[in-house]
Length: 89
Length: 268
Image (cartoon, each protein chain N blue to C red):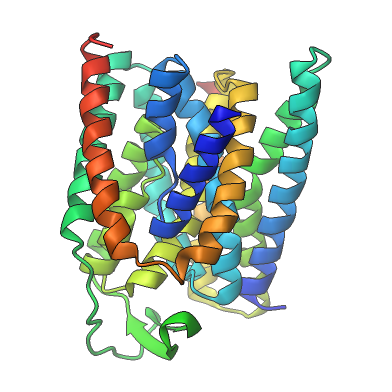
């Protein structure tokens, strides 16, 4: 599969799983049973774009596109730094 | 149910114009549902991720989204988003509302004047030369060269900061920036913006998630509706007269900006 089709696939997969969990979780949350499924769905959905970046990076590595591998790696580093900053803030 | 329907509408608008939908979510959540600005921004960012991934999936698969350019511009956009989210946590509610109103006015103005660059110009062969196909417009393997990349990246920092401070996806800034300033074809700019918005929104949303300020039920309702809307919007994007719709949307944006200023001033 190409860069575009693999990235599109992971975006669709993550989003579908996240939304499905949210839909079920919404019912359970309104019924006052648990919020955990809702939270899990939101987390999976939020991480979908990052998974897209990781899969794109894998495709660029396979294609040995060095300048763009550097770009993708730098973006991942910045995303991780952002998560660390927000965790310790 | 009302929120779900509004989110579907926001998702359609977001997919049509390369926006995240936050420009609609924020006023709805603050004015109609009484959420404070921080909670509204947090829920909006989750909805924006859903709109972005919902529309980007189709655009990426068709090759309209330029993933390489998107990742490059996201480096500075994400830095801006992190800075913006940290600043936002120290700001008063009314300041965020005023800031949001200013973004609305800017977006409305941009939509009203429709400054699309249709002439892409000559392109040299280098690492920033790409090609795209858009069967809906009869375009096949057309090459374009991305210009002004450094200053474009710098401006994306501002887009990222505004995005996480106001809960808006930043598409209203990125699309004209890519099209007018960086010479990216409008359809590619819009599709690439859809792809980028999700990553920008992630940087903001993760901070609100860790802080525990995301209202879960509201965010899930917005996300589900926004995703459905984005899928519908992507399908109708190629068949719609966007220029007429843009003029109506700009009027709506001006009205929302005015209402938000009233809310910031405590009149609503």
